[in-house]
Image (cartoon, rainbow, N blue to C red; front, side, top):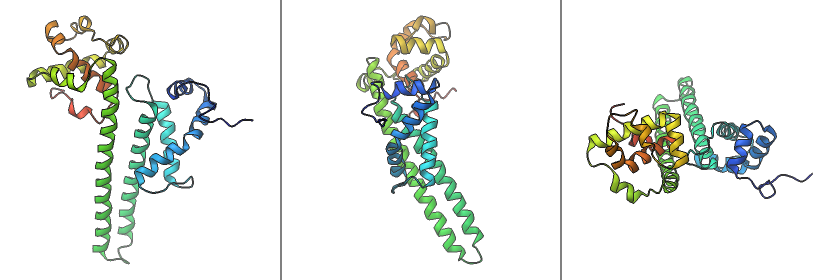
Length: 247
């Protein structure tokens, strides 16, 4: 029997295959996980900054995280599956590193009668500082990746970063009001579906849920769409920048 590889799999996108798996194709799930093991190891190795093989705990965690990404991925969220899987794997590995750091601290404390307390504290502080540096670096990388994916998604709606900067409301109250409108839109399944299918803002329908005028919504149309896409695309690294103060 011929081995299934990326080259001879049916001409479906990876995202199409993920949908088939979510609909119950467990055989395809196993094939996809097997094929993308090199990808999983690459992500883990980048996070841990060292070589990872199949015998390590980190690799097992990466496999579980990749499978988790398969289950949680949603089409239309603005990013490709591998970008989303990369993010899930990174988070699970970081959680593992944190857990290991806490356990290491306990081990140092248990050896208090053997080792000098100051050496234990120094070792733990070095670990803590290294972990904080690592997490900050990962957050920056994740933010850059999501900005690129967000830029691609905005283009589908005829919006560029340059045009968005021009249409950003100048007054704080107007910006906060636009953020509230975006939250209302993404919280309503029919409104968010309309936006994603028509690539237009459902202004008439929105007027039933907001107190501002049609003119106000139309004036800030691009800004509201851009904010809504941050939530709909699950760009978690960008959301802190658009959370309305009134929520």
